Image (cartoon, rainbow, N blue to C red; front, side, top):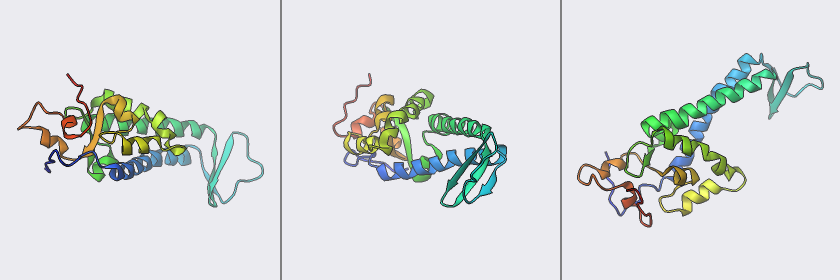
Length: 192
């Protein structure tokens, strides 16, 4: 494992975080889309017809689309929500990394360098309501660039950090009382 000294900020992983998020977004979107195509009895189209049968909707993007049953949209939302919770709360809470973060060599840790757990991961996941505003105004990106520890709103609310894989190794065994916050300039360790 790589060991990080106090002179190197282990939270400077914004590019890795962003690419990891894209990987995760792709993963949690593929299954719901496939569900819509199967459950919605999809019919491929190049453009939406003028008249649709009752209970059917049409989606076209760049000349590729499908006509599906309306109930499949509910299935999309259900499967998407389950995938979101599975990836960002269950897997990340238990292992410290979503599949995208693991692929890019970063992980989420609590202030003491441990795995975030389900509660912190749930807070981080719910905070995307605020951080997701970044589609209009890059709140999460600005927060990650300009806050000590490069933390988005979800990290600030959950008390977590996203760091290079292996950072927690620098916290133990030679300094078990130290927290990851001690590695970051300008961050106050308020954990008792």
